[in-house]
Length: 82
Image (cartoon, rainbow, N blue to C red; front, side, top):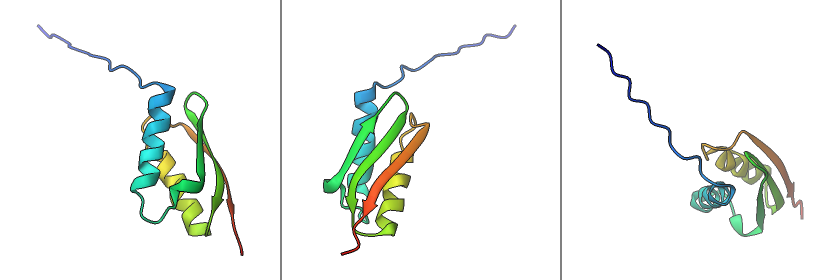
């Protein structure tokens, strides 16, 4: 006889996902998270605001992908050239 015990975890809320993404950005030493806006629309995330370099923009995008609930990242961060 085989017993299958399957349990489902509760999917975190949108607010939880937004908080997770913000924390991931704050943990990344290469990203100045103060100027980055995080907007969650279900499972897609939009990043907006200004960053200082292309590397910082890329790192912020990777940080957003770190949340297990994120299915898409729209990285609208603007790289300041001056």
